[in-house]
Image (cartoon, rainbow, N blue to C red; front, side, top):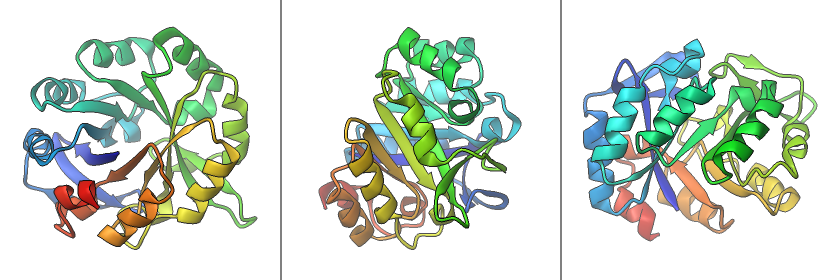
Length: 241
């Protein structure tokens, strides 16, 4: 499954380089038009990140995201700044298919486990955005990638086993927006260590060869953002390859 991505800031489409808010590319096309074109190309899902929400720790673009969910014809998963159950329920009740929980999944796992059971495992995706440490392990970052925690990726995932968690989204921050290829070795490891989890990959896709390499792993989904905005290939080609 290919998930074309929209990253939102100030109501517009942007992309960051390695998660750096100071290295931002703005795109003129409106988010709703991007979503409509993706639907026309044959996509089923859209991945939307509220980067303002991720940066400031509170959802800021819910109205726009709900509009996209209602008007695009796509199933939408979205995250960024989701800290309260009421905000999550507003998105889900507004037509969003599922929400993506990042920072809280690391800092407040018991709360997220409660949400998984309260809302259903098909409504929550745990997103872990990781840096590789000097010791070779990967460590999830929080607060819009501005802070890195002490727990390893495996420690965080181990804690969720048995909680009902179904889908996990893993981003290698060093690959994000770089277009040099995804961290296939990391995704192979996760697939082997956690075969019961549905893995969505994110970060690094810049060519159709990168897409094909990821598809060989048979992940639940592959998120593609910048490569589509910059016409490295078409969404139709990514879906078909």
